[in-house]
Image (cartoon, rainbow, N blue to C red):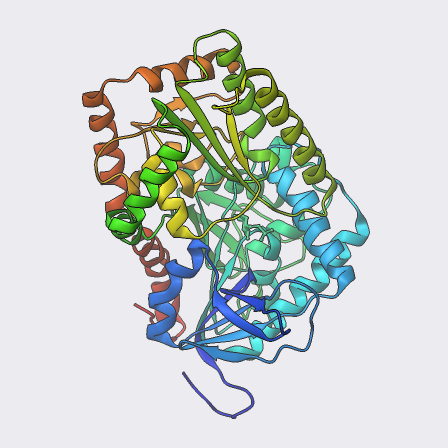
Length: 498
Ligand code: G6P
């Protein structure tokens, strides 16, 4: 870390993400304190942050705008305030009601509003300016996710000396869908300010490259894109969009780096006696049914919760499942609750849960335990240990870490994972029972296959999935991404982080 002025610390490594790695908690007396967020990105970057004494720029949530930057276990926390209007237009609007549904294959219709776009640009500009202030000469800046796609382009203009990585945590859609976006060219140009653009799946990287070819006619082959620049290496905004540029160019890498989890930490928790006792308690409180199924999702329309409930309800109605033998736990953690599509989804799901419980439940057995809460990791691990089957039926999902968490937890090599082929995790967890969640009959048959699967086959499949997850954990992910940045760092005389 370079401290050239006490008020303006500078860092060799700067993370830019919509969310901070810490959550602000206010106690009964109104005192605020900070606690590590449960998210995967936080654990992924923790070792790098510690070694490099890096900084993290992000929104602290809410609209409190006078939070001073501070040090948190060796990470410099730089809170980026949002006004109430920006929360509405940049976060709830453009990020979560335009880009989110568009990038998830328009499962819900995206809304296009020019005011939201203006707010998105303003907020991205502010994030980029802050990153430019905090980055030391030759630093590395790692920008995350769909909320901040303009940051690489803006930052590249301000700071040609820094190395910029961007990782997209959600899918990148096919061009036929992406091309709906009125600001499709600006977003692509924004991303191309990065040196390395990471995606979850090979298909996402391919979709991005096709968008670049269609919109800008740049050459993209293999994992590299050739971007014409002006003399100082900045992105040209002009029309010199030729396939074989005669002037200076820079090379951008666009490829997949599937994200993962801190797998060993999950396994360790699963081995704790108190967690196992809690799992046994969960089973017995449900009346020790033969089969416990579990769904764990943010309450989001991309997760296919309705499809899952439909299949489950029909299996009960047709008598293929008996209420005494089975129980479904559905954890649906509250998310983006002020966005209309999410409100509607919650109503629909709660209506369906009520109907299924009313139609099939008895005094002693309810069909679904529906929990509209978030839980600490330890409770989640106990749930995974208690579950014979985990249902991941996303209609579209960048990766889906629940699938990987289940595999990490089941060191007993038991349990069946039903996994949507539309989740990024399906590219890696090939021994899950893969399903098309739109095909309700197919989903029902797959659930029955899971219910009836013999122990030996469960074990073979879980062993293969665990091997993948334990060997490709989140440390492997962040290292492979950062390794891709090192030639850029070297060519600029910057700091190699690894
Ligand atoms: C997804 C996105 C993240 C986001 C998270 C929670 O995983 O990729 O960027 O932080 O959902 O959503 P929220 O809107 O609460 O940040």
